Image 1 (cartoon, helix red, strand yellow):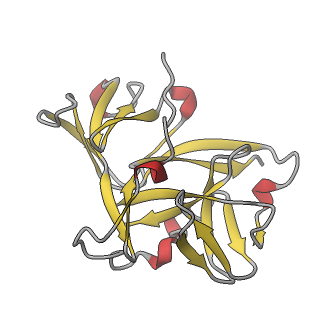
Image 2 (cartoon, one colour):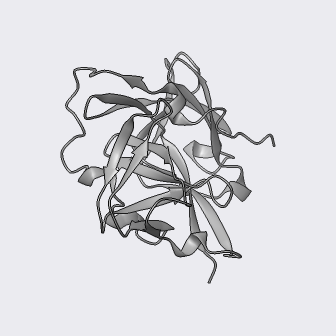
Image 3 (cartoon, rainbow, N blue to C red):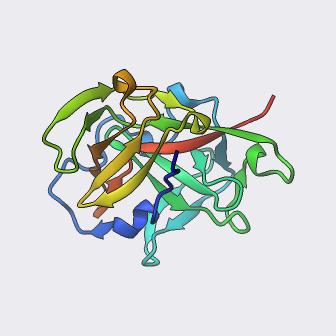
Length: 199
């Protein structure tokens, strides 16, 4: 089965300016890890730190004690900004960021899963006309079972289900969400790869 990887970081599709939406959303907790995902790799900030977007502007000001999920391990670590409508990544400079993150230790043995960050309406077509099923938020899938996703176009992602969801459907299409934090918009990625320390 072919493997899909994100072709470009979600921030490459970010657009500055308010989209008229409701801001970061009630209960967004400044993007920090939710209780449902506490068992995954987390970076805890031990001091204040600004995370920048691709344009060099401050995308997020992290404060001491704030805790964010990690993705992109081990080679391209990034924090996951968790939102009620999805998630997006912010590149993490581990050399300068004041963080405590056991999963970033040299030689750390990791496992991973894909996690759904918002309820997904899955369609059989890229035009999003034929609804096949709905996958609930926080559903998890293993990369070894073929679960994955890839950006297609026009804020549409193809999800590779590997027959494990939607009555055996191999793949389908979902619409990305737009997340506004402050005055900056981001494309919300529906599925992220999260990591755990091997026991």
